[in-house]
Length: 352
Ligand code: GDD
Ligand code: MG
Image (cartoon, rainbow, N blue to C red; front, side):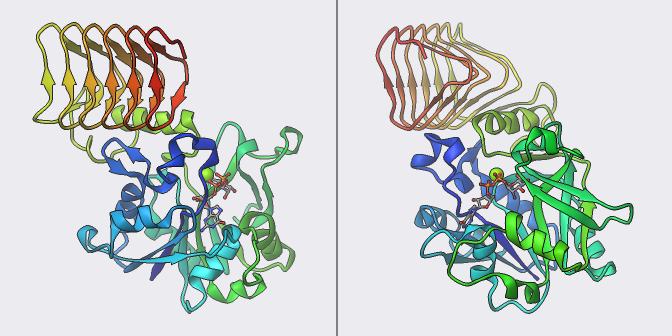
């Protein structure tokens, strides 16, 4: 069985982080995001090939995963000449498929019984099966109404607040029958959410729901990107590198240097080669990437800092995301949801 990962979006809501790092490979701690999805797919032995459907900066992604042999799974790449939308991408990547295929949005992280989803699809002899999950506010997602037997009756992408009839949304995980792809036109952008799913309903094809009540998140905004780190540090989602680490879940690489008089409070993640100088305070929910330097009397908390940054003395970095190779000057304060792109330089005393 094959799985298609839709990983061709531009990641606009995660800009500026995604200018140099496509969303599928933004780091979650020290691993590119897709590693976590591939871990999940590998739990289903029947899945023997992952097809990465790419468009935006495909080379960067190929360089990281290669043919998949390091991960113990076969990876194939299909790069669209131009973005074809979610349905167009599935058709383009899965044109030659003859058996049921698993499709994943390339930005969702979840603890799901994927084998159970495939089982339901087969038991119900469905043409398509879609995983639903409840969220507080469905407006940013695809709203899905079902009947009491679990058949999908309505699919409404990005509903207005007055159109909300349920909390169940499309979790971005499907099992599809390739012979339903005939309705998707070739070589023009087409949406799985706005066209393909509504067409299954219109034609009264067997289109069923699998409700997932466990952990689920779409990492596609800065707030959610930060949240996923917190969830893993808090043990709400069990994932490397925090799997099996006891409270207060603190992961510090072997060669990290913490000078006398610096303090580190968990949960936190401090990667290889980090230097934390005297008087610095690294507080809960800090994630500090490789080779970053935290200078004297700095205060860090709730921040995700990518590799190779320099945070100068007396700076405060709180509840912010800082891209690679940034230079934060002395006494700078970066707080309250700020997001800095790679190579940002902030002059001493700047406030963001
Ligand atoms: N190959 C390819 N080509 N991939 C694409 C394209 C394209 O043209 N457009 C989007 N993608 C990929 C994105 O990279 C992402 O992994 C996935 O398709 C979904 O796109 P998003 O842009 O993240 O959509 P969304 O988050 O607003 O909404 C989607 O996901 C929600 C769940 O997180 C929809 O499927 C909603 O219905 C759903 O609730
Ligand atoms: Mg998304």
